Image (cartoon, rainbow, N blue to C red; front, side, top):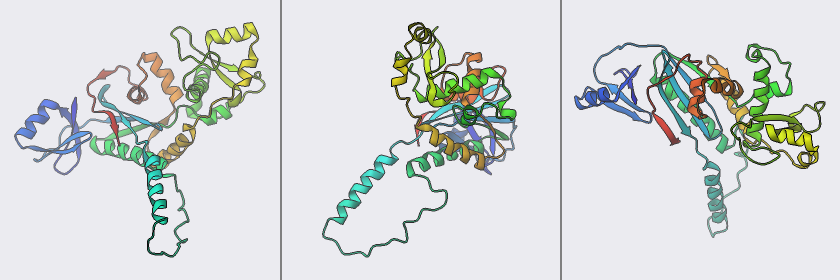
Amino acid sequence: MLVFVINKHRKPLMPCSQRKARLLLKLRKAKIYCYEPFTIQLLYGSSGYKQDVTVGIDTGAKYIGVAATSNDKVLAKGTVELRDDVKSLLEVRKIYRRGRRSRKTRYRQPRFQNRARKAGWLPPSVQSRVDNTIRWVDKLLSLLPNPKLIIEVGKFDIQKIENPDIQGTGYQQGDMYEYRNRIAYLLAREQGKCQYCGKPYEQGNGWRLHHIWGRHKDRPGHWALLHEQCHLDIHAKDDEAKLKKKKPKSYKESAFMNIIRRKMFDKYPMAKFTYGNITFQDRCELDLEKTHYNDAIEMQKLPTIKYVSVFISQTSV
């Protein structure tokens, strides 16, 4: 596990090993700067040797995957767990406030001038996740020298789903990327379960996109996520009625991902952006396990992967 290092002027240097960090702390040549992620600050002058570092961020509604690489080596990787208790805490506060109104207390004139919401207002639970995502990105950029930022801003591209003919460099990846984009959308909407048998992914029985009402109705609400064998069984038994009765699940995270995507575009215009369906395709080619930090590693397009460090794991912020 590597340790982040900054000089006495709070400028980032390349991370060092744990042993070197312990020696510097023991000899009082450095002090602890912060614990998450663990960082030391040198107490003597040192410019240090610096390399270009790429920071990958896999944004999400519940978890953030982060990874930092340099010269085809993974310097740091990990997963940040975002808070999910903001709404419940606000409900508790509302109960206490309503309880105070029924007690025998001094009369207070009603106030209505504080009811207007400012431009760009977001619900507190959403604002908390947005702020913490930006805070972690800024923290990593401040602790690594010459950082280059790559951000995954969604599991799928809803514009590509609605309009397959959309143009641009981000959409020039071929038919397989378009198909994977739709599969990624269905996996998120159905929480990784087949709409026919209700079972999750099975080895050797991959996913298939099925048009419930025929290909002439090519809309997201008319798609079904099926196992390959279930897809064959439906056509063999002519069992379309079973799917037509089921109402597709709503993808609740899509609203948040749209919000965080706009925030990332505005906050980091210099960053490179990608989508989860592209990450999924490339991760399968590298035969990597599905984790948030592996997505953050893969989006950096490393020819070979050498793991060096893990610095964050299930940290609640």
